[in-house]
Image (tube, rainbow, N blue to C red; front, side):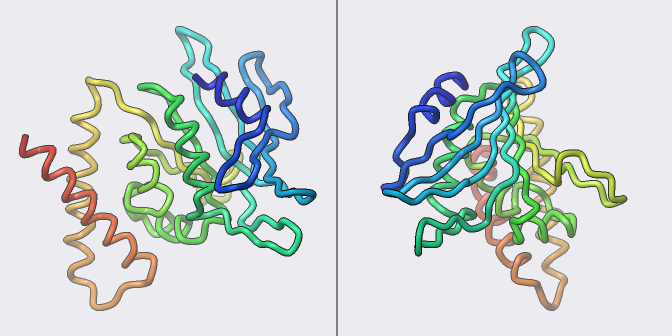
Length: 218
């Protein structure tokens, strides 16, 4: 449950030999919402990682969701610099909250400082083949929405939303992902050259397609 995750972070958790804890937990805009100011600590050194907003839900009208925002690209612990993106820290935090979300519930992750994801989504690549989207797909999210407004209208920063499927929606969503990725790969086959972020997306696309081929054969 999300309440358990919040409690664990308030007490502090060890991830890869470092202590991750919510230095401050404050009430959000609604009584069901809390804000976590997450920090990383090693001995006498500590630095902020990101902020997390948790909405516990308001049945039967609103389902729970989680949002990661104001993410620091690099974290400094004395003379040690830790990169957040593609780190064990990022993977553990995403996994921790993902496991607490059930069908129909969402996670929102800001990607402004995530260069690879920003380039991939900014050029219209399917969300599951982006750096961040692939991580969420592997964690069981099958529906995505890219909250990016090209006209300059910002709503809490650019972020990717992933939603957990229910029994009625999972087949439809996976089929849509399958078709979108096939279209993406077919289009890229005709290109003479690829940018580095497209090459990485192609590798992920082939991995997803292989897994979905096995599912649809059953």
